[in-house]
Image (tube, rainbow, N blue to C red):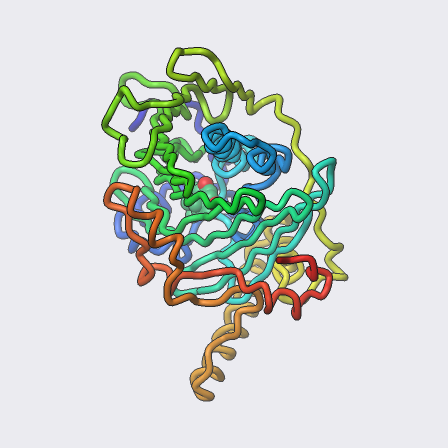
Length: 396
Ligand SMILES: CC(C)CCC[C@@H](C)[C@H]1CC[C@H]2[C@@H]3[C@@H](O)C=C4C[C@@H](O)CC[C@]4(C)[C@H]3CC[C@]12C
């Protein structure tokens, strides 16, 4: 049991039996998170397609690099924005719901769309489930006013060894139109803490990278509360010119602190150049169309009956409504197989190669694209998007 697991247990009394059976069943876990059957109290009503929104809940920080003329500072602002997204991505459910929950497993073609409107103009989000086996979610987020585009996709490879360990496969690319600059962002590994006590939460581990086409790389190292020492949700990051990861003298900036609380970024002279407080930073609310106006493939509409049943704690209806969705999906796959066709993704296309990705990944030690693990390399297809959604005519 890790230090964090000794903290307060929170399995409802009526669910103690199902939680201990779940924990026992994890010993033979096959690594496919979508096939994991968890007890009712730990089920979330939110699908993984919605998680793509965590990248842009603070549009001001996302677009800040586009406004900076100095390339080195731009790379620094990209690092600051990325670090600011971590709390939303990995701790927001824990904070909002009291623990991490098991998200709904998206079906192929599931969509989640929305926008943020604030002083930075409109920031648009499209998220689409581009693969079911393995589960892969792709997304595109753009702010035309500031010429900022983020796109990426991800899958999770899980294993069980004392807890659930998850490696993320995939990446994101941030593009700044004004500077014709790209940043390749790799995704951190994570594990679940607090499993035995029934209050699961995410802790990040190992390292992730941000590689800029302007010659600067950032490496972020994650650590948490270990057996004996350590602080929850800790991070340390360094920014250096490409190829100089091992040279201490070449470190341009250093970040240190917590991704759920405060971190500071200092220059080589140890002067504070940026500070961030995750608890104080204001967020912009994401606007999503009312359910009745949504496309039938949109997440909240498609999962409504399942989500309502989960909220009522009605497991029979939850199971029955999930089966309706699964059987419909099976019928679609069967039809496609008979017609020798593949499901047409609405906004994304499988690419043979993405030159900027192939170039920047070389700066990541042991980095590889792992296309076989994500059913391909997925890119946002602006032509498809314009014809599917005429409102997106401003996409470059
Ligand atoms: C709680 C437990 C019993 C079930 C395990 C749930 C498991 C499938 C969940 C838990 C945390 C989830 C991560 C989440 O922290 C954040 C992200 C970032 C997002 O951009 C992509 C999805 C991902 C990796 C979630 C995947 C599903 C996880 C591992």
